[in-house]
Image (cartoon, each protein chain N blue to C red):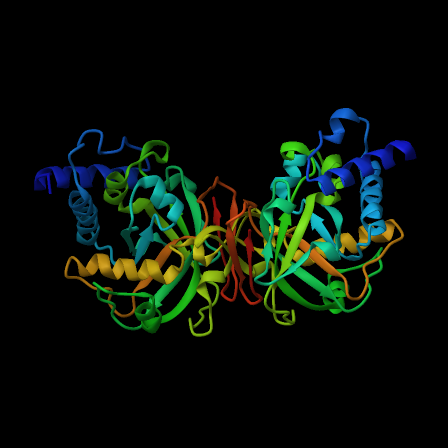
Amino acid sequence: MNLNQKTIEQLAEHLENAELEAHEVIKITEAHPDMDWDDAYAIQAEILRRKLARGSRVVGLKAGLTSHGKMKQMGVSTPVFGWLVDYFSVADGGEIKHSELIHPKVEPEIVFVTKKALRGPGCHIGAVLAATDFVMPGIEIIDSRYKDFKFDLKSVIADNCSSTRFVLGGQRASVAGLDLRTLGVVLEKNGEPVAIGAGAAVLGHPAAAIAALANHLGARGEEIPAGTMILSGGVTEAVSVSPGDHVNLRIQSLGSVSTRFV
Amino acid sequence: MDQTTIERLGDALYDALVAGTPIAPLTETHPEMRIEDAYQVQRRMIARRVAAGERVIGKKIGVTSKAVMNMLGVNQPDFGMLTDRMVFNEGETIPAASLIQPKAEGEIAFLLKHDLQGPGVTAADVLAATEGVMACFEVVDSRIRDWKIRIQDTVSDNASCGVFVLGDQLVDIADLDLAMCGMVLEKNGEIVVTGAGAASMQHPVNAVVWLANMLGQLGESLKAGDIVLSGAMGAMVPVAAGDSLRMQIGGIGGCSVRFV
């Protein structure tokens, strides 16, 4: 770690204020080019500590930068991870106030709910599938606090991987007999398909993102507890949304989930 | 366009196909060409192939995505003919030298068990007339230099069809929502495209409905036993000798091919 505790606290407050007041900021590595990965996760953890102190509760975890294309573009070999708190959750069919966000985009995701704890290192797809209670469709709304979504890896980790809202819905399905690689994913905006893909777009298999998360936490002496909800990563490019947009996600064998931006 | 010109252009495309040498866009030399003329040119090109001993075994539907329609400035798909010389089976090799500038795309192929006679064909008719579906690679190719095609060029050139590869299973479509079937395409072991059925006209069945009704207007029909390629489920991938391609479609099966 290259930043002192005071700087980490200041940067956490700076980024959290940007989220709460819905305004963009310049990526923090401009002023702190020496910050490292551990600093970035420490800032992310400090933002969470601030929220928990105000009464928020963690309701799930997320993986980001899970496509090989994005990872190549950012020059990394593992995805990045963040947390989700209670007020991020939007009901299926519910409304999201666009004015509370900066420049939101939506991503289609396969969501895992675990029934057993997962602990790395050495966590693999088989362990994840055995520990999965069910999967379901989810729309993640991302909203980088950085100007024009321009960030580097450390800045985006500190910003809790651009997390802001998520919508869960559709139907739950057991992973037994389900090939998550070939699940078709169709994201529609105002009735028109705008992004189409299949599960394999996430690290070759969405369960690999969950395994990577368990291994990331394992390196810190932590685990994914039983009963954890995890967004496994965007299956397609993120799509920008405006007030008035209706977004519907359909995933093969998992039904659909939708939200409206007002 | 007069009949002489149509035949001359159809012959030029046929000669380009046989020689493996592309020609300049027809729309450059014949800017007055309409889409109706282009289908007549295609008919001539196919007539030459049939005269040389090939047999028509089905149809392909192209320009089925909004993005490609926008690129070509049209609001409907196009179609071309499949012959026995174009079909390959799961795991076979394709000599790359037999093609000019090939690209592969993942598709759902329909095998029909009943005729479909438009107009008035609906999605229910297509489902009832379908024996089963298969994972399929369409290898598109253009006899027009550098793929510099306008819609009239590609229609004339048999909808840029090259060859196609049928996959490892024929599956019943009962309980299968083809729009939601996901497709994963790997080239030389790397995932290069993912997509789903909805990429073709929101639902692959829509593409077959369109084709049956379009053929009806021309006094033709789809026949029992025909193979129909229903349009790309994702982006096209350039291929060359040495490439190995593998594709899997959720609920349908896989298809693989090597280019030598």
